[in-house]
Amino acid sequence: MEMLSKKIVDGCEFIVFDLEWNQPIPGKTYDFDCATLTGEIIEIGACRYVYENGDLICKGTFSADIAPAVYTRLHYHVRKVTRKKNSDLKKGQPFAQAYESFREFCGTDAILVGWGNSDPAMLKMNLKFFGMDNKLGMYFLDLQPIFSFFAGQKGKQRSVEAAVDYYHIEKKDIFHSATADAQYTGEVFEEIFRHNKPSEVISAISSSSVDPDVKNEFSLVGSEARDTEGALALINGFLSVCPLCGKELEAEIGKFRIRKSQYALFRCSEHGELFSRARIKKNKSGLFYASAVLRFATQTDYYLVASKKEEFDKYGSTGAPAVQAEDNKEEIDSL
Ligand SMILES: [Zn+2]
Image 1: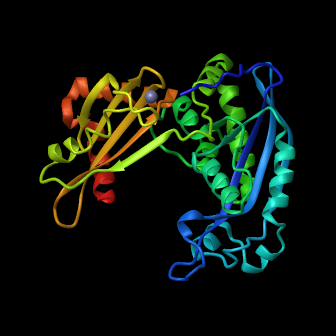
Image 2: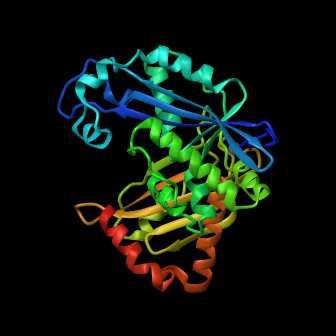
């Protein structure tokens, strides 16, 4: 994977953004395949930041409400979370118009920043669905693992609200509005710089930014097997070649297993390092299968696989005793 080639120096711009989207109503039939539009964007919120002297300075905010064209009634879950009403949706502007203003706000040389990695994919899906150019042409940084890394909670997924609490950021608006969430995410970004060495933050950012126009994550649900070893053996083929070029992968950190998860770090001589994690699951018939992801490794991924390897070397496949109870609970929930 091509890493961020642009050096982060004074004057660099970041667009911290967040989206809210509506979902199809379950059971309702639409005259298109809902899998091609799993969510229709109804709000874009963003803040522009400029990096100067180890600090981030907010230079403006952006907010647009969008009137959905196909999912015009709020899904009950979206209504609950965003506290929007059906009548609010009509007050928005057309998506194309809102997106054009958003791109103008972004400028031509910024790095997009979001919380979690779903927003760029959702934006691209909407652009494609409505027949617009879906190339974003900007690098994207997921701030969530960067926060976990600097907050000493590596590998944990935290909400924006948890990060806001962690840094004692004042709460002045409701969460789950794109505009408010973009502002909170921006403030968390500011705090990360404030509480850590800027050079270390920059290094983490540079090695974690991805090109959202290039597919960087691949997944596979393996076939069923009688036991967990068998389930893992059935995904070996998937984990042996580079998903971009088909070349055989070399193991940098060979496959190892802690409880129901298998980790590894591979290398393609042409495309760089790939992180892999496979989870063993059990279906209703009592058979096992593995659900695997293979993705171009970011700094957070290196960290995760290295710390899991350390745990494995120390405790073996049963993992560290202290976290076992918590992990087992999660695994049972996901079965
Ligand atoms: Zn390759």
